Image (cartoon, rainbow, N blue to C red; front, side, top):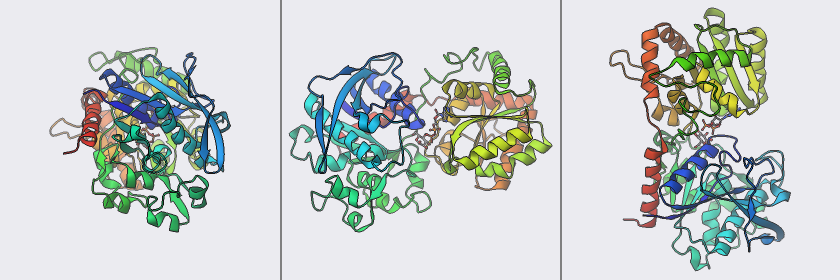
Length: 486
Ligand code: ADP
Ligand code: GLC
């Protein structure tokens, strides 16, 4: 049945992206649209947005709308466009004083105001368009006050009487925590009793907690992560809140957009290949070596990394292990990423120590991300925690064997190679420590040395299917359960 879905995300591929949330918003949006749903994406109109040449149009009747942020009044306008290459409607909340900045997120003193305005604008826009969503799908903390807003400030509006809210947690490490004074400042405590009683007695207000408490449904991005966030180790302080909700967090593994991430048709690659015709992969390895200034060696294994460089991603495990491996075995490493200085200086020091064998490109670069996925032999993701992770699924499709830690979505999407059965798609290690990392890298290099086995692992991965055709259905079922429970 066709449903009206208001899909709210702070980033959407290809318009604005810092990580996997954008890929999910763009691809799931497209899937839902193709399935005949009236899905409308809402995101901020960042000045850095890449509209691929499209000019957004001002939505009549939703210009210079005054939004009340507590006693402060801020104007926003709504612009509309479509996801490039599709008919998916995208609404951009235009408010230059908040969104004309160098980066999507910041530590600025008004960060809470930026994303509060965003959410107010979503509701006010639905009202003015007379768009009556069956489901408002809120993603991460930037959208997690919407359930509260619908129950307080906008409770009077019959337009939303049948609207259900779904909160999807993409990363519980980011919660949107602001000083308690901001609740009053934004007018959030105007309806007594609705803001979590304990919340105001704390010194801060936690937006994600509000979403978990008040959304009609809560989901996250893999079955294993759904379990992990209900434990003290994985919940980052919100496990008790999650457990207290009668409905357990539901895990739906992310899908992959194989229009963008497929070595047979990848628009960002100069050569193509498939499981049956793998020849192009060798050419792409040579291309990658050339672009990154690595020695032109076709038989030396090349490991790739594409990542935000944060503690979540587990690169601390490489500090004590990777130099030893590089000293004792043939291996090249190509890294693309940006983030915390300690990882930047570690990778920079490796480049100095192993010239021609280790290369590091800092910054965000879409084309190089695709080239690393395609041209590498293996892909390293030793995450401390990983709600889902997309790169390991991209790697599988590109015949780039993932070396991952058994956590979150990595555990759900990569199977350890089993020589007995010939099954398995990668190298999976359990413990978050140096010896386990060392074992995983050595095992990967040993397996690489056995060409027949390696080809089998590659093929096993390339024939996996993590497309949205499968995962998207799960969201449709979840929407239905929320709309018509029982
Ligand atoms: P997360 O969302 O935690 O960063 P995911 O694996 O879900 O992790 O998604 C990361 C996405 O961001 C992937 O599409 C990956 O290719 C992309 N990405 C990460 N860092 C970079 C970078 N420096 N340049 C280009 N793409 C990047
Ligand atoms: C988050 C997680 C990542 C996940 C992505 C999309 O950024 O860190 O694991 O794949 O969201 O859901």
